[in-house]
Every structure is written in C-alpha cells, then in structure tokens.
Image (cartoon, rainbow, N blue to C red; front, side):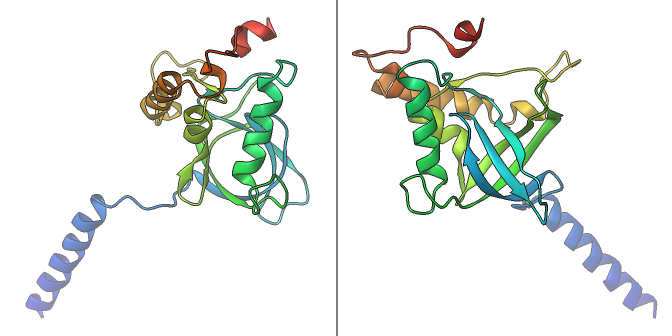
Length: 185
C-alpha cells in the first residue's frame, strides 16, 4: 500500500513540474469576444459571452491617430476593420481573444486589452503596419512596470520596423506630423 502512495506522489509531482513550464493559451485574464464595430484605429466595440450589451475596448500599448487627423486617423480605422473582418474588407467581424492588463479600464470607462485574432497580436500588427505609435503607460497609482508592459518590447520592435520601412505614418512623403497625444491637447 505504501508503494502505491509513493507512485501517486511521484506522478502528481511530475505532473506539477511538467505544468510549471507550460504556457497555456488561455488564462483567467483572457476573454473571448465578438467584434461588433470598429470605433477608431485603437478602439473596438465587442460582445462578451452571452452579454446583450456592447462593451468598448481600447487596445493596450498603442496610440493611433484620432479620426480628425487626416489622413491617418481614417486609414487606421479602416486598417483595423480589415484586420478584424472575416472577409478582409471590413465587414462581418469575427471572434477575438482579449488579454487583459493589470488595469481593467481607462479614464473613459473602456476595457483595456491586448487583442488576439487567429494567433496574431493585433496591437503589434497595427504598429508594424505603421497605423499607430507604440506607447507604454503606467497603470494608475503604479510607480513600476506591470502586466500592461507585457508586450512593450514587441511593440517597440514593431514600431522600429515600420519606421525603418517607411510604412504608414512613417511614410516620408506623407508622415504623421503631430502625435495623437499632441493632437488631443
């Protein structure tokens, strides 16, 4: 009988050790959502679960031009519509995974999230295509980096790539002259 308990203990221990190194695709901070509408180059409206209300989501780590920033605001919105659509044309939006940050919502009540679609981090794709700037913001009341910094290096690399390639807002013929933050002030 003692031998059975030893074997069970070793089996349990090996399972726990094996699980420690695994990176599961879903966690407590991930939510599946149905995209309903693209509001701007960094904000979408989604339905979560069986909800009958639409929830607004702001993509973490990016700052896209405002819609009034011609031509990049509208182009950024259209690009995000294409990335989220089932047909690649901006119609019939699909399902996304929302990976939450430390801070649940921003000052405007929008849920903050990294948005995944078909295994791709859309926050990164938007920056890499030159439709947004990579930005790193501290959560309210925090003096040090947190979960909201999880992909900051990835986003910074994507921005450097877009800048070097001259994509989107980095196009030397028609660059974005004022950052979205400066424009809003």
